[in-house]
Structures are given as C-alpha cells and as structure tokens.
Image (cartoon, rainbow, N blue to C red):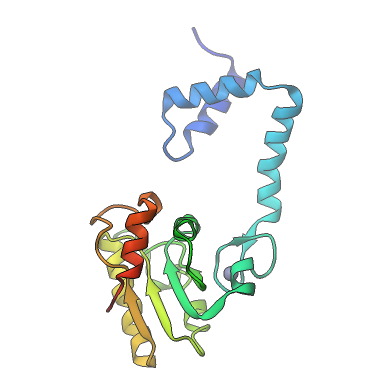
Length: 194
Ligand SMILES: [Zn+2]
C-alpha cells in the first residue's frame, strides 16, 4: 500500500531532521495528522516564526531575537567560552554558575570538508578580545575540536590572554551536547592552560 503523497512528503520532512529514522518519522507524521486543526496550524506557524524572528547575535553568533543576545548584554565580558554550535551554549548553561559570555564558531576546522578559518565565526572573536582575561575552549574533544582549539590558542595567546581548555573527562570523541551536567561541570572546573 502506498501512502498518500501529502503524508509521504511530511514523513520525508521529519526524516530530514537529525536522529529521526523512518519509523519515528512515520509516527511524527501520523501524530500531526491526528492533531486538532488549531494545533497543526500552531505547529506550522511556530516553524515559520523562528525562521522570521531568530537571528545571530552580532557579538557572539548565538541565536537571539534581538541584535545582541541576553547573555552578551548582561554577563561578564572578560571571560569568553568558545563553542562550536548554539546547542553547546545550552549544554554549558545547564551546568549553571558560569558568569562569562560565549562565542559560537558555527563549526570546527575541517580541511577535508573544506572548512577553514574563513568559514567559521572567528574574525568577530578576534575583534572582541579587548579587556578579555580568559578564553575557554569548549569545542568537542574530537580531532576537529582539538585542532580548532589549538589553532585559536595560537592566535590568542600571543595577545597576552590566558587560553584554557575543558579538562579531559568528557571522553574523546563524545559531544559536549550529550555530556551529563556533572561530567561537564567537572571538566569546566578542572580546565587547563593550553
Ligand atoms: Zn551574544
């Protein structure tokens, strides 16, 4: 039995999302069909709405609905925690207690995928280092994350700024996004100079 075209289209939309396989996509599509008209329209509106209102903070590159995000506006700008993706900011914020700001690179260096320094949000990082005391590298502990941290530390350390890296503890190859709060918190507290 072939499912109606409109349902197949919706299933394919869900399948394009990270971590969603064929069965889950099918379940999601059927859940949408079974929603009330109001809920389904609200769902579609929310998708449209984030595309219209969410932009990148002009200072740190994180998602915001304003020119400058709340973290950049309210927190201590003398400490910058550098992460690869906006979702890593959410992971770091979950551990609580960090008072500094972030800088989102939107990727890591990957010569094989053609991602060099110019493809990342690095220029604006170098432009906001005036008065900064510490830059914390919180890229994932995989090859690309390490290479990115080393590359940036070579640029930043000569400016007389302390550069640190999250301690090992988050196992090699695992993602900051999925690290539990206790592990991430320990890796943060035990960060070391690089
Ligand atoms: Zn910001």
